[in-house]
Amino acid sequence: MPPTLLGGFRPAWIPVLVTYFCYGASAVTGVAEIFFQKDTLQLEPAEAAGIAFWLGLPWSMKMVAGVASDVHPIFGSRRLAYMLIGAGCTLAGYVLMATTVATRGPYLVAALLVTIGYMVQDVVADALSVEVARTDDEIGQIQTFGRMAVLLGGISVGYLSGWLAGIIGSRPTFAVATALPLVVAASIAIVRPARARLMPASADAGPLGGGKARLVLVGGLGYAAMGAALETLHAPYAQEIVLVVSLVLIGTLLQHVGISRGVAVASIVIFLFRATPDVGQGYSYWVIDRLGFDQKFLGVLAQVSSVLSLLGLLVFRKTIVKRPVSFTLFWVVIAGTILYLPNIGLFYGLHEWLGISARTLAFVDTTISAPLSQLTMVPMLVLIAKSAPPGAEATMFAIMASLMNLALSASQLFTQYLNELFQVNQHDYSNVGRLMVTVGLVGLLPLLALPLLWSEEQSGAAGPGNRILPADRVASEP
Image 1 (tube, rainbow, N blue to C red):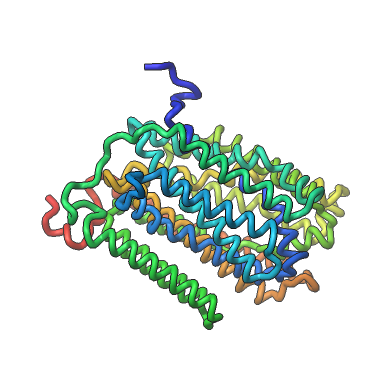
Image 2 (cartoon, rainbow, N blue to C red):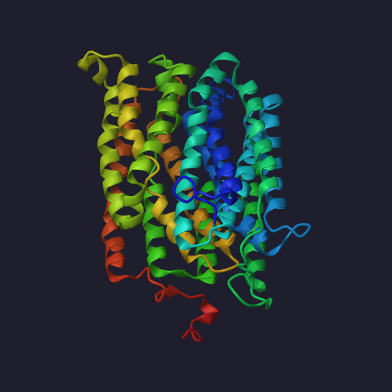
């Protein structure tokens, strides 16, 4: 056996990590998008949150791509063909944003293409992360290295994102980003054959057999069509309808696939944490217009945040893998809330009281708080990977990730509500401070659910003998 590198790293992991890296590097457009939405599209903060809601939904549709990748090979390929499709969608979206997009509707279409492309690539990378692992320990290693690859991607473009947006503008920055899907497509040349975790021979056996796969595909595609129709027709309460239907659909799929009770409880609790609202683009617009934060400085903040997030993951990765999910969630939320206070203080002039510049306070706050950003999801990823049924790796990752990402769509919906409630817009930022205080307090509410998760962890409900079974298997399970 060849010597291992980086604590067990093997060349077979490269395509997975390249895909994660390029997703992280998609942050190269982060600053450009803020200014594109603010100046070119002239979106209000609530409108930007509304768009973010729709852009989050493809990530809640990962189960459709996961099932397709697991049970419907294209030209004999379960993984690589789907990787190419995803890369093609992302490339097309970036090209549109770099050339013709000038209003909300076309922007939403182009941004959705980018998002769908990254979603499909991520589904394939998640499945490959299980297939190339030889042991459960390697699964944990790959997932940890995967989070690091995402962060390294962000680090590689952190300052560049602001520099490009400030020097060449938003559209050319979108053109630069077209290189990312091309790199992903090139990486598939070194993919090695997956280890043998095959689908059950019977068409009606296993978690994805027969009608179950059709349920996921037909239900998921129908859900996507419904969402597109509601948005196109500007139907009232379209976002709320889509959110409720999504939760029902994902809950049904999880029942059919079957997950442990401990994973189910952990998923619900993490969903609550991720569904809490944020301030939205109103804060970004305010620091640009009132404090003079330009593209380059926002790029510096992105760079610092990415670097320190990686360091936080390196320092705490063993602890967060070994300790209960409830422990990680509790201390990350408490610490995050405390470290959020300087942002609120910035609005109320804390930097003037301290005798420092607004940029200095923002920089120091980012430096202190950034290491927390990547810590909550690693334990969940490891739980999902270890509980994935053989032959259904992509689907298990996809459905659970769909639930987690649906929480982010819910977060954007609540963010939209709060921005509308406090009437934050590009002409009046007077209520941004009260909005930030409200967001900070609401973010503490999910702590009330931690005792339930802690109880499940203490009872050992995450063990293999406590599974939530598909309805048609309960009676026959020994």
